[in-house]
Amino acid sequence: MNTPTAHLKTSPCPCGSTKHYENCCSRYLDQNETASTAENLMRSRYTAYTLKREDYLLATWHPESRPASLELTGQPAQQWLGLTVKRHEQTAADQAIVEFIARYKINGRAHRLHEISRFVREYELWLYVDGEILHK
Image (tube, one colour):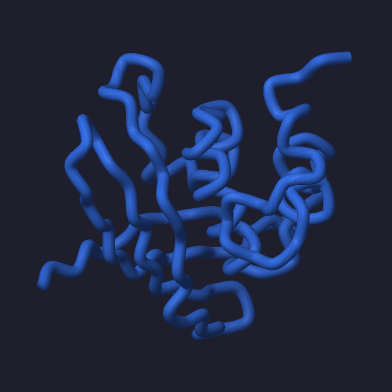
């Protein structure tokens, strides 16, 4: 079977870990494994953005803040350049924050997204709630 992620199987995972995609974010995006930490979920969500996996992004977004759609295919082509997780902090048993910087290009112009994301765990599932974008 030739899936959109087949070429990634033995490639480094887009999330910036040292693992191959099949041993990293594929577990969450392709094999329906549950992320054990908010950081793992955040990394898998970054990978989902690189792969335009709107289904996964919406499924891992808390229902109270989830948009109806992301329309990733209708946006200008983004070239994702890398992810740096600055910190992961478990603030309560079922709450966490992850601070990260995601770098990307649109039409050859470099951008960076520096965000502190909030996550909650409900029914053993980590979900993205929202984020505060940090400006220089």
